[in-house]
Length: 126
Image (cartoon, rainbow, N blue to C red):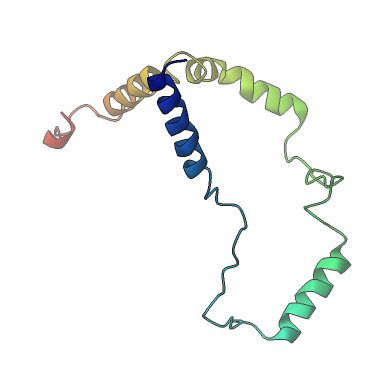
């Protein structure tokens, strides 16, 4: 190994050691200088905790199921019929351009369909 390679290797070791010296781990404590002031009274907090425990629902639990008591307002047949009726729009939104062309075409068609015979043309919609 020549001298240049040894010097470069030593420099790299030194630089990598210096770079990893302050890794951001908990090496020093941070002292908060401003004292904490609560915006609510302790009784309010305790009452909220009691109500939370009494409800029996824990959204942080592994067995939490938000749809347990869900009731749909439509039947399965109604939902299927609505999806089938809108199948073209669904296919367009799931396409390569995420429905950009579909939205542009339907917006243009809606502007054309809104104009009535004999109505004066609005210059801002040209």
